[in-house]
Image (tube, rainbow, N blue to C red; front, side, top):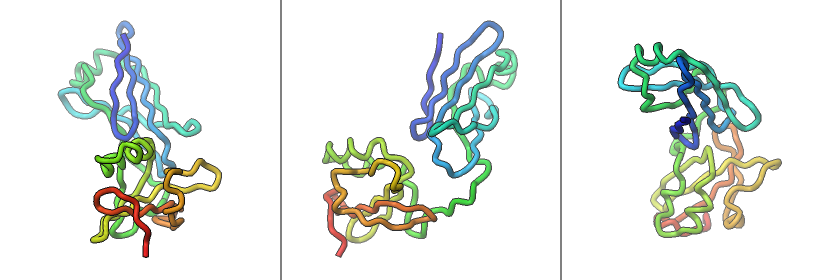
Length: 179
């Protein structure tokens, strides 16, 4: 029987017992920022699984490990999984006052349209100010535009070495114009 465990921002671990072995498949979105190592944990210490390899827009790692090894490491049954950045490709971090926002939908608790529009966005940045907050969505001329319903409010800016469409909002989540 196959089991599924979600982790982080849309990461997933699928695993199943296959006789004396456990087959594991870990997948996560490829944000292009570096090399990631996958891990699992049961009731003991984390067990490193190895480096996830990029395959198009996905990072992927497939392993087959002896069930006895997982039991001895107290990693069976698997309770938790995740990935850790082990080598950065030198992408600059967000500028001061900005931080990574992994769940932009939380910013719009009263607006279901905006909440749904931002739910699938990745690698967003957030800056909170006295006027409200600004949400920065990665921008690439060759990719679909994030948050199309509010394109007229966006300003294209370079933040942390990458272009973003920056959308300003009031504290209650209503769009605002920067003035």
